[in-house]
Image (cartoon, rainbow, N blue to C red; front, side, top):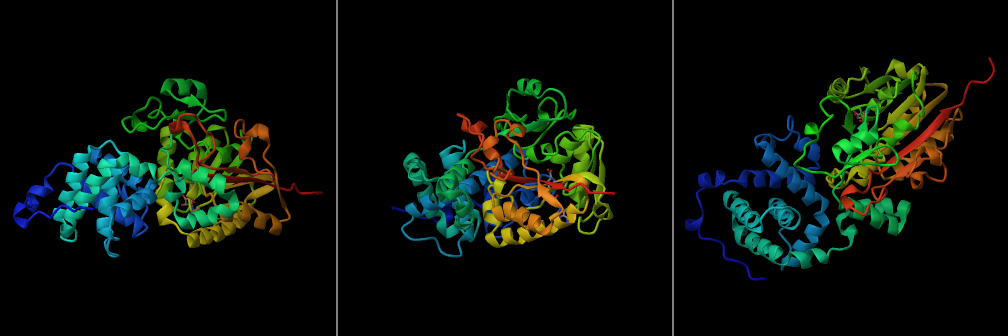
Length: 466
Ligand SMILES: C[S@@+](CC[C@H](N)C(=O)[O-])C[C@H]1O[C@@H](n2cnc3c(N)ncnc32)[C@H](O)[C@@H]1O
């Protein structure tokens, strides 16, 4: 590859001039945060929270913040593709310690290949970044040459990365292949490449009406689905402010529905925050106690409930120590346990790079422990629903099998096909729910898919005699 010569220092714009260059600060932040995700395994949501995120991110205006998020989501979603293209464009690999350069190239390539950013702006700003960063200065020519080639050969370079598995890190492939098989795994990887729709759960009344009002479609299992549109923030849509609905992935809406009719029932949601499932239960008329170990997450739940105008009793606490859990007084208990979240990679592509096989195993042990504790909160004859948004059976099916083997007082209450209209394929042979991002297909990929979720419904055997 012919490399453009590095400009002589006399031709480089002064740093101060550069600092003011429109769009440069956003690209610098994107590069920095990409390294924070993939090198330091920091969560993208945490880094880009508008209130508590990375200070450099918070200093950007709202438009630049949205651009940075869009760059990062694309760069992570297609990280394998970008790496493959990069190695095609390089005569020799980048130096091993060139994290900043690697992140700079990925963020710029993501703009050229996947975002609506003019190629000239993406290239020019990336080269400007090399001028203001002493670690990158000597790579200006290389960056310029690679990015111009990527822009020139875009279609061909992308076409060569047709296999979606290129974008699923090896550790995850190795975890999921034995459970799903090669074909289903490829479908999941393909679904991970798509932009997820916005799914909405309606508080009460008519979901069909809200589907019409919001210009969405009503899925057979009650979720209203809209195409994601960055220019239309959900907070500005009709019905948000008055709490007529909340955003909740179609799969995430399943576990709360497994209790059936809950009107007047005492339900404990033991890992409740930020409260999507709690809200479903409260809206359906249950008397809900919401527990969470995290005070800040519980505060978010309470804020959400204020907007939704739903009653709630929120309790901060650790399931493993709380008195209300040991009392065995609830008609129903939901344990939506903390997990690796690999089922949400479409929405949170950083998960593929911030989590690991070791962490999955650690989380599976935590879930088993929490499930043992949660089981004590259920009255005889009551229901225990265990769920999480992992695709890994170690965090789902295996946890429940072990639990049932150790708890003779519980048995599975299998989920029947008519409980999940349109999603019958998600019911496993033993009657649990297992969704994947490849489910709920649609001719329009922007309206397809759902999070990967697992849910099991367990019945505490009614007391005999007495
Ligand atoms: C997957 S999230 C729950 C999502 C929530 N059910 C919803 O639908 O919005 C898991 C939650 O479990 C909480 N958690 C983790 N360990 C806990 C424990 N030992 N006791 C109580 N809550 C815990 C976390 O703070 C986190 O909010």
